[in-house]
Length: 432
Image 1 (cartoon, helix red, strand yellow):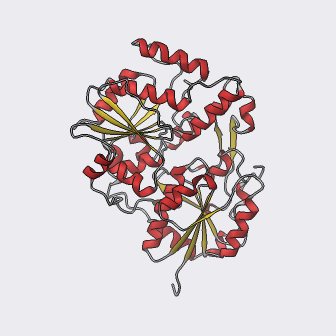
Image 2 (cartoon, rainbow, N blue to C red):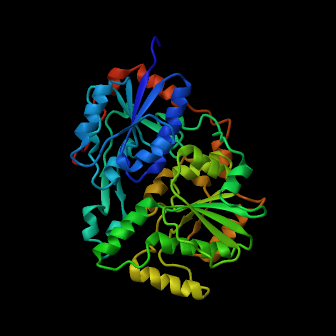
Image 3 (cartoon, rainbow, N blue to C red):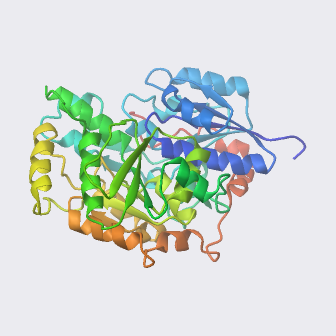
């Protein structure tokens, strides 16, 4: 090209740090190839983007504010816009509609990591369907229609988590992420003493927000938060592993825990991409409640064992001690229906993720365990901390035989056909 290509990423998420960080990973690949990038982000995620060192423009992307985003895009007049991700304006409450975030006169592609844009999807939010959640449905609806995108050329599917054989698929990670700090130095920074294992625990911000709203709309005085009770449960499970652990909880709540002599808890606020990557690279295990987690995929690429805490069946395991006998009634009193089946908390998405599994070796490989079976959780963690850890996610993502297009490849292809990428907001359903 005779001049530097200018790429603008539009990141409409207010809760979805993973999609933002995926966009930043992609942007860094483009920058390394000589392109320039800018990021239009929401107020809620602006600090994460700035801490990651990208060029940030902050705009509200709430309902009725999309025109400001389009105006900014057209003033910048980039060669290409990348919307990250397609599903977010449909899933996040109060968000501007997808058609209000895309300029009709600037070529645009959309990251479709979940594949919903290919054929459309009717997805659930189990939390919003719980009894007593009627008022909550002003923010979260029990089902959401995500329409099929007519112009499939406008969809790009980053692996992971997208299915590798989807049209427009590419490897988000064209190499193993490098970190600046030594592993030992990072562990020392988080107070991990020699001989202790470092377990990073990430819990859904969507679930915390949704359950808090649910508790308030039910008129309950919430003496304890959903996050607070969940971390109590996870620490209980980890105390049964039988080894000394330091748990780093990626959450804002800084309440201390000293219940267990073999488990210490360190809280950290949400981190910029580089600091977070250093933490992932220094960890012995990454644990989350979302099998589609972008952060878990990043941990796997970096070689860190991972584990998804899910709940695929109705009911919970029989309590085995006094803590469990008390914990479940406490949860039930504050958050009735907390034990619904899920692969992605708080949406549920048992069938939705099931539809993504065929042809997706990464998702098939992710180790998972029933979060409400404390003995099963402790056993799975023990295995993942041992020399027998299930490292198939890392093996799949580092497989040299799975050659795919790189971020640079797919963007260069898009830049070569700008006229095909106008009006990419057109879908089979514009009701949102």
